[in-house]
Image 1 (cartoon, rainbow, N blue to C red):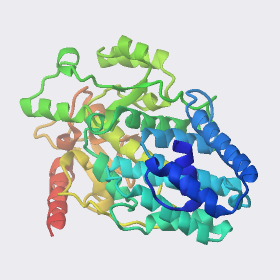
Image 2: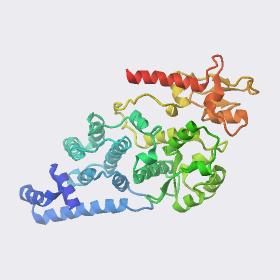
Image 3: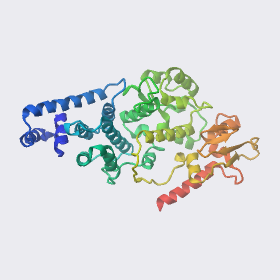
Image 4: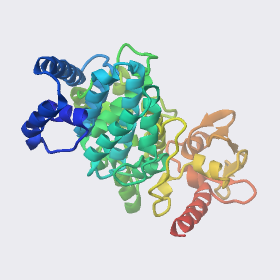
Amino acid sequence: SWFLWQWLIARTLAEFPIREVFRQFKNYVATADIPVAELLPHIRRSADRYRAIIEGGARPVGELSRPELFSYRISTLDSEITRPLVIWLDEPEQAGVPQEDKERILVTLEGWLVRRALVKVPSQGGNRLIIDLIKTLSRSSQDDLPAATARFLTTNATTVGYWPSDHDVRASLVGSRAFQKYRRDRLRMVLEAVEDHRRGYPDGTQLSMGPIPRGKGTVEHLMPQKWRKHWPADLTEEQENARDSILDQIGNLTLLTQKLNSKVSNSAWATKRTDLISHDDVLLTRDATKLEPPIWDEETIEERTSELIEEILTIWPVPEGCSVSDHDSGPGVPSATVTLRDLVGSGFLPSGTVLRCARQSSRWRAVTATVTADGRISLDGIMHSSPSMAARVAAGSDSENGWTWWAVDGTGQTLDQVRASYRAIKATEANE
């Protein structure tokens, strides 16, 4: 029933409920002027292709074709509305379209769907939109179909059709409790895509032996949810609440097998890190285990959140040559979302700014560091990705808040004070 419904939509380009399949099929046979002896083999070929893509996409292990990978990913997004387009691309009328162009269309559509899922855009009206897309492609030159798809999806400013910008995706992910915000299978699919991107799949670089098994890993926290019992820390009540809110950010999540997670779940970071290095082969976890010094805390989670978001935007980019508008400017920028890179990029903290220890009567007064153009801190020629990492090395301590440890040479303003000024201006701009 599902196949015949979607096949009929692809053939007639008309929207109708699945309960009307029988009536619509009779009408199609009566008006299409195609002998049944020709129509049935046509349907059979389409059905075989439809089944092969869906069953192929359900394979948990091994490399998938691009249509199969598209099928797997849209299944986790409940985006079955796109299947008429997949059928349409393989109909006889599109036999002259190169397979590479067909795959480019699916890649573009997948990016549109994933971004909309991440910003939680309502899906009502999607059936009509996909039919309108197929109609647009039907009227387009066959050598222009990928570009026509990109134009159609990026120029639709309605809620039903808009393509979320990089800003929209960042606004939805930065600082958000992704573990609670998204369905677990969807979150796993996104993390799998990041892992595959690092392994060189499906772009053809194939840097690893194969893509990560699909639907097998569990989404787990690096810093455990029950940290009070297993990762004790001398924190104020406000700091404890801040830690609770950051645990579910995407930067604290990875993919583990259930057995490995049971083994390392609540271990102290030193023990957990050793076990992950020894037993885990997921590249997604290595960025956390390779940190020097080997500390996993709020700031490293924020840094990793920003890095994963940028990678997600790279995997599902706005199509080349197209532009989209921001739809969610947000109520300002909370402190947890502001990175050193933001301050450098906005001019609040120019590249080359010299930093010193902010503490009075400090034995580290002679220590200096420099802010780099890419938003890192250079200390004795070594690059550090965050203020706290640099502060810990400078102080020889395992626990330093770099935002209050470092001050701008000459003004005495701490990085936290610079960040507060940035937030105030952003909040004013948002209100205006």
